[in-house]
Length: 230
Image 1 (cartoon, rainbow, N blue to C red):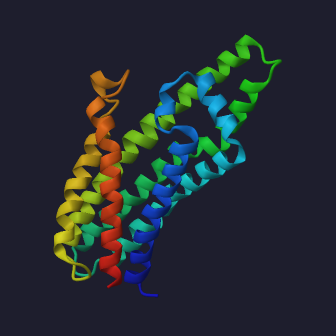
Image 2: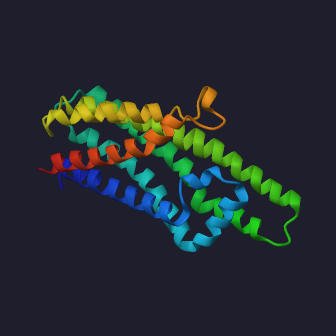
Image 3: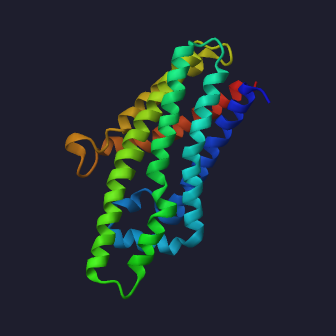
């Protein structure tokens, strides 16, 4: 298979897996709204989901990992585009994959242990308080700070750079670059949800824009994948 073909297939597969996992988590776990509830309630919902929920979190985590080879393959596939630009885009895309992986990997490997401790009837109040502190700390640091803030910012930047490269390449129609730039700017804007004055509760506009931006991003990946395969 050619580089263009491999990049096109991955551009088609990644958004399908990403949205399937997200939809499963939303249905089974009320994600992401559940994260605004008390720790005990979140962990109880997590336990109710059982192994099936943990596996869906694992799949969701792997979609972040898949962004790394996608970023490299797309950069190699965009013949005619400025090589320095696509090299930077590939680097930013790989970094986006890394930070999103770090933000998500706590769910299939850390949270199950916290949920078990929380369910232990012999756990002392101090132990339950420690679970609450650990869960909320990882949620704010790896979830909000690393996975969401840096993840949205780097994914948005990668999409903008990719959009510019699409306007220069011979491998796909140049007009595909325009929506990519717009979507990338929206994703970067969503990264500001918990920055500055909005840090305690979040910026509501960014919270509303994030799912819409990711739906548009997924649709653009599919369109780009089809273009590279044709």
